[in-house]
Image: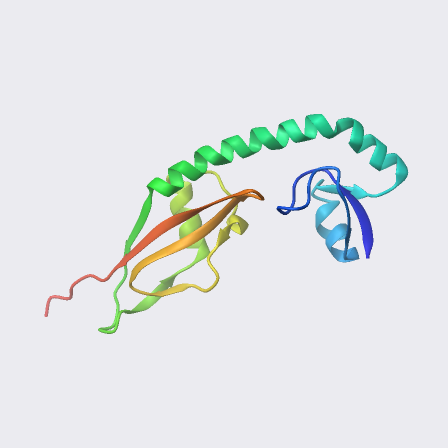
Length: 152
């Protein structure tokens, strides 16, 4: 385990300036290279405590931008027609990539990893997908999967 001091909010209970113990790989491969944390040395802890107010202001500004995006997402319904069997099972599926592309087409700039789909959608009907925009903010996108009526 490695102790790091956080430069940004990571999880709901991990605030800016918090000192947390994380696995070495998580710190060295993700937190430190992406500038989200520094190794918890006395010098780094002091440096971050001096910068804490500006880091929190930056986080608050980011959160406000994400709140606007959340409002847009809540007002949207992603509707897609996919052929399906009689029981509603789809010939194909909806994946994170499909949702990401749809949101990008709506001029919403989010990251793929924010979309919490779990398993691909493989049945017609209405579905809700959680999107985590900030550690303290998530919203839901409505997805409506329609089956085209076959003309037989």
